[in-house]
Image (cartoon, rainbow, N blue to C red; front, side):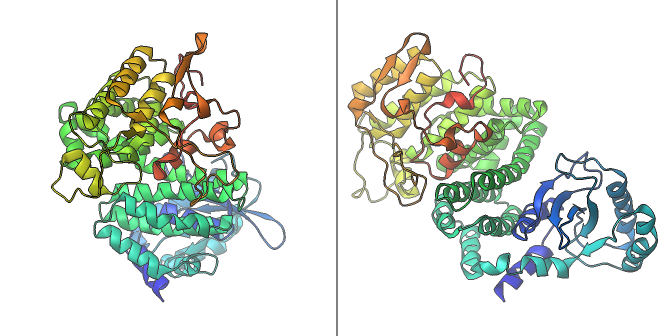
Length: 529
């Protein structure tokens, strides 16, 4: 069967232990395990992953999973034995780790036991385990993992013909917009929390293939789409708020691994070589560079807004943002598809105490240039790359289907951010320039309906230009009119535990979500939060 071939290929191509973490943890959740946490790192004490499950006697079993890559040979068993001893000796690990519960150690590896390792483990179980008062160690090798991943609770639910075609298309060069289109069905297909976790297993496997093919950013974008599916499922009342929060927190932690790798890479590059290094990572073409660097900054922005970075990592992130926001190409978003990306990135930059005024001024100038002197204006949200390239670069393609436009969501973003960040001079300059050129700042406002988060609902409306006014209210500063004063903003935006949800959803459904107040996402003193 096809899912067997996919699982075989996945298990046979694992190069690093961390390639196992995301799909393995999602598989545990799909199988009904609770309180699944990744502990791998300096303070794991042998416990790469922990989880809990209630057995048939209603007893809580505290599972501990040391994870290894490949086969376990006699040479590797010495280190594994030390890791097993740590699993036994250290009872503290995580707030959800129940040291009083029955403890089950499970060695996980996508290979085989080589030589006498099986005999040694049997000897450990017969002699050492009883003396230590622990349950016999279980071994989940390649055959057991294949069984678990292919079970009816997991990957057997999925259409692997479709998934295989999806992966093939991405490896053949399909871009981020293709990923967004193909993953929209996840929202409607996710009828339960178990379905979401199964989808996460699929993404984890695809994620490992993409990373090995040097398509790290595609893997990151695919992971972001899981957030969208969870929020849709919650909005449709298919899952509870707590289930949604639990799932989204898991996904954010998966993204944090990408963030850490990006920051570690950037910190290792000498200061005078960083611009060149960024170009090598992202590409030399304006559009390619813009898209890839925007996704890099978006990924780091989520970690910043989720407050999951250490002080050292925040310092590196600040250096990266300060450099990128000075790069001229990144001050020129190629279409309104990136309007909410600007919101996310600038919000994170503000929380890092970066002066974003120069960036916003340069962005306003770019918008004016794009709509003046006979230029056709930037492509609207939802436009295909072909139109983005033509409007940005003047590519020699058939232009009969593309009409000049004066509507701009990016212009609305500039005014919104200037208003919320209390930049009155910049706001007045940008607003005057937009009016002089006849540029209409527009934004799509979600209607106040329970299903406003669902795909295919056209409840949004676009306020006409004359509704887009600002008023000064004493010490409160500029307050956006109309929908920005809505008192009934969806709770998804204002739940203090999830200040990253709205930006995350904006990244994969760019043309629809606008925050009532970005102040809640920032920590700078002169911005209420």
